[in-house]
Image 1 (cartoon, helix red, strand yellow):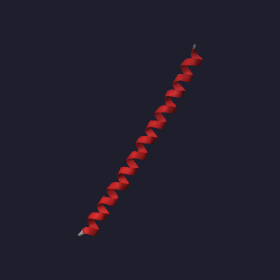
Image 2 (cartoon, one colour):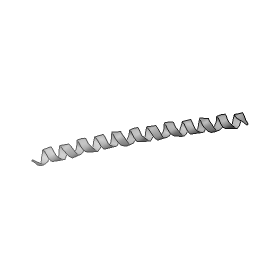
Image 3 (cartoon, rainbow, N blue to C red):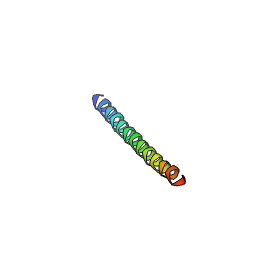
Image 4 (tube, rainbow, N blue to C red):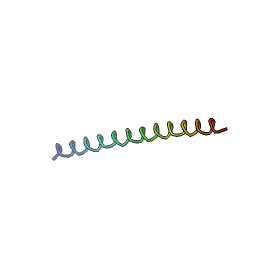
Length: 45
């Protein structure tokens, strides 16, 4: 029984790491998009 619980907790930890990596990717993409948008505004003036 404890082996199954350890496996479940390991899976939950892996999913949490994956979710954290996805959040980091979204943040980086948003940062790149804002830099590009700023470049468009600067070029447009």
